[in-house]
Image (cartoon, rainbow, N blue to C red; front, side, top):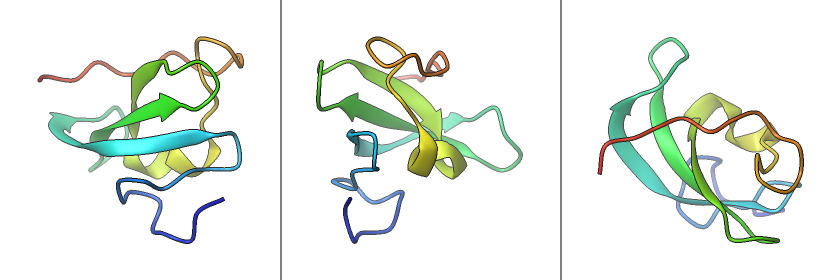
Length: 72
């Protein structure tokens, strides 16, 4: 697990999900923005609330909740 703050690019949670960056898209939780995560195991990229990064699991290969959409 990374020592960086959970919303910093490069942060990796215990489930191998790595923060790629922040978007300007509103998240689904109060006062949250969508962050783009990439799974180390399968390279799937998906959006998540900043407050959820520390616990996320990949929705593609690890049974995690569906990711959030974001505007590019």
